[in-house]
Structure formats: C-alpha cells, structure tokens
Length: 318
Image 1 (cartoon, rainbow, N blue to C red):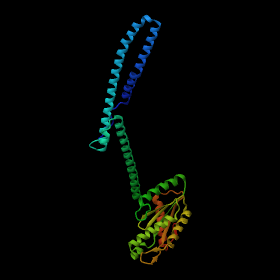
Image 2 (cartoon, one colour; image 1 turned 60 degrees about the vertical axis):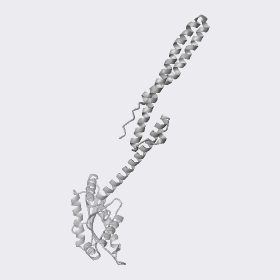
Image 3 (tube, rainbow, N blue to C red; image 1 turned 120 degrees about the vertical axis):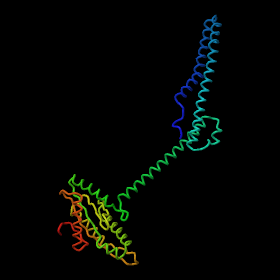
Image 4 (cartoon, rainbow, N blue to C red; image 1 turned 180 degrees about the vertical axis):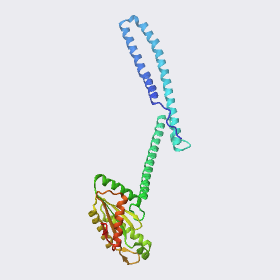
C-alpha cells in the first residue's frame, strides 16, 4: 500500500530557503553598507584609513567566506531534501500504478521539480479517475437499492403495490386521518368469475387480464389514491380524504371502465369482457383499526357478489 504521506516538511524547507536568500542578499548588502560607511569615515578622517580598511578586510573576508559556506551548506541540504521527496514521489507513483518502474521519460528528467510536478500531476489525474469511479459506483448502488426497494414493495405481475406494503400504507393513512380528523376511504375490488375465466382461456390470458384490470384501476382513480394488488384477483385502493360518497364515485368509474373494456383472449379475433365487484368502506370519525376498515369494505364486496356481481356496495345489509 502507498504511504500515507511523503516525508516532506514544507515549513522546514521554506525556512531553509529563506535563510539561504538572506545569506545571498542581506549579508552582501550589509557588508556593502559597512564598506560605504568605512569610506565615509576615511573622507572625514584620513588618518583612520589604514585602521578602518584593515578592519573592513578582517571582517569582510571572514564574513564572505562564512556566507559562501553557509549558502553552499543550505543549498546542499535543500537539494538533498528535494531529491529525497522526488525519490519518495517516484515510489508512491510506482505503488499507485503497480508498475515495476517509472516511465523512462520521467527518470531521464534532470530537473527535480519537473519530475515532482509530473508525479503530482499524474497522481492528481489518477485520484480524479478514482473519484469518478467511486461516484459511478455510488450511482450504481443507488439504482440497485431503488430496484431492490421496488421489488420489496411492488407486485411483479401488476406493477401495483403488494399486500404487505399497502397494509403499512393504510395504517399510516388511518393514523393521519385520525390525527387531523379527516375522512379516509378504501375500496376492495374483485374480478367476477375469474376462476372460470382462467379455466376457459388459460392462465396466460388470465395474467394478461389481471394486468389490464390493474392498468384500468390505476388510470381511473385519483392521483392521490393508492392502488395495490391485495391477493389473487383482488385489489385494494386507499382513498385519502374521501368520504363514502366520494369513494362511490371513484368505484363506479372503475367498475364502468372495466365493464366497457374489451379483453383480448389471444385467440385471433376473439374478444371478451369481464366485470368487477367493489365494496367501499370509509373512516369518518368512528374508532376503527386498519383491519376493521378492510373487513368493512370486504363484507360489502361479498355482498356485491351475492347480489348479482358487477356492482358497487357501500352500505351494510344492502
């Protein structure tokens, strides 16, 4: 694995270069000012010429030698640091790329700074590619999670919500209706004589009819309503903010749309019709659980079937 960081101290290197610049510019400048001052003293006091000139030589020559040695030493140590960083950058480069060696055009580069620049530029590019890969992986994972969620809550045959999810939604909607004193309607829908339909035309045609009925229900309820396949050929629709009368209007629209639809049996030009029976229930202030509400609508559904089918029943004992 690559090292966490290169062994370089920006502050230390900067301090060394700052001292180097000081030795290269400040000390010569100071020495020059001293010489100027020395000459001015000579003009004012000619007798001090020998004494001051000797002093300048005694101080200037050692200072110049010291400056040169110090500058050379600092330059050597700074270049050694840069060379070490270059080597470590090369190692880092090789470990990132899994390469046996750094490309020849880089190793032949004499300028240490250019070599480091090449390494850093390449590693930044590689890092960006990795970030893009991570972003793409995150997007793929998000899409996979969405598909998994859909599989968990959607019925594969009809593409409506499944039994478990619609029950959870019904509990949530019922609690909201109770909290804000709003009405809530539901309707239970069952395809009439569906077993006979399957026996007559086969299960493949029956599956197609289920999908057609699902699409009719979805296209004829309100945008706020939530349809689901409750089981077999039975459907449940949650009707937020709907009273019994409002639920009956939606139910009649669905019943009529199914009755008028022509179902293809897959046998040439032969077509057929199916009907549905619907029971409507509603929460309008009385204390009810989600099971009570479903039982209410379910009882009315079977009353519709017993009384001739292709009907909407919304009261008890009709």
